[in-house]
Length: 201
Image (tube, rainbow, N blue to C red; front, side):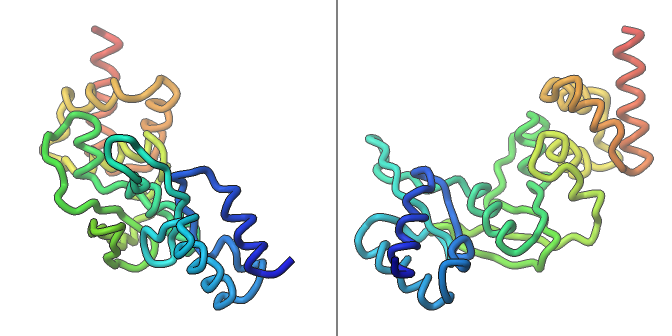
């Protein structure tokens, strides 16, 4: 079986709409041979290129045609390909916990890798380097999302009400994991104050 045939066979194993990178195929042949095979599949319409080195099998929606993968999915596979850890930016995390109604104009993520901008289709996405391992704790799950949201609000805005909204979005196990996470003293104090109030209340 040729490199092109191997690449095609593996690419067709991905779920429709699920992004994947050219790095997923490098065990099958040289990068140039892999890229050539993927380019051929793009021309055939079997896959679409969504960002540099990132592809997906088209999944048609009767309302919007072919829907692109979510930015977070694309960023996640790029991060995996580069050995990076990524976390949703605090502005978006706060919105998901109903702590803010402001929609970020440019989807932004914290990363352990270099800061850079990339395009997903026509959408600009920003990756911001952070040296703080605490900000990347529990990356990819709700506990990490909660930490990101509280950090974004900052010391003067993390009220009991803010912690209550975060708590409502977490399971009991997730809230325990949040309390046990590494965080600044002001954040720990706010969470403990809420916890003590909910127990007495």
